[in-house]
Length: 358
Image 1 (cartoon, rainbow, N blue to C red):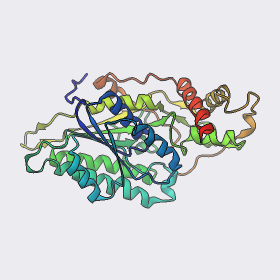
Image 2 (cartoon, rainbow, N blue to C red):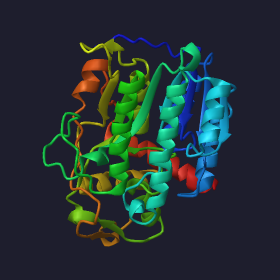
Image 3 (cartoon, helix red, strand yellow):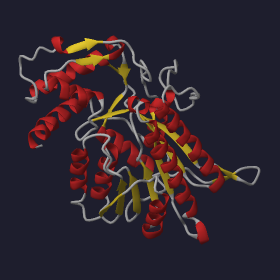
């Protein structure tokens, strides 16, 4: 295992996408575990999905006295520069992004603005944090995605695999993020760690994710569509586990070294964060249904079979995702601890509460 070289206590930590699913969960964990640290969150709180859910996440965060929220977009270069100048973050976690494979077919502009222009602004701000001899950013951690693997036939997916053939614009922007981060790491000696997130689920999750949208439809008596005739397999990881892995990665910045040419060797690392145990979609929805019944979201006599439809694959989707998390285990001793049933039970119980509280 690597030795932690960053103490998160007493640090100024910038979390972009702080109103999002992973961003809000991470910011809450950091604020609670490190009361002497200052957590700065930024999010544009767009209407890609229900804004009230984002506002609820923020209301939970704002109960922490060491959390400060700034509403705005990382695509606004002036705003990003102002945040860096005022707060001087020592650790930056870039989770702000336009997500979703299918939505990239409908509104590609949003992906260019947030995922490319926005990330470029973060990289530039990190670069200039070293100006005038300042210590600057100690570690930039950023979100990539399992989508970069596209239709890779090699299973499980490894960060050593070539990922040059994205099957969606979203995947292409995430691969671009990795290339941009590597270039800035090389040119300006910025310690960077990229995290390829696999499918994350849990309470306060995104309503456009399958488990959440399936629940909405089943509760409304609608039919859910299982693509690839239910034969898709997904590497699913519970939100608390993804946050744990991210925190561990934050605590170790890749070491700065000088190469034989006298120039910096990029202090750059890339990890998969997944469960390492893909689940068949039909098994997944069966467990989800059982837990929704147990939580009282669906009646005990719910006719699940009549509410599911098997459908062919759709554009931009892939038949299987499967994370090789060996590097994460070796470097940080990380192994997800939440079973699928336990995670879906927690989601179902939260959903029962949330749907009644709206």
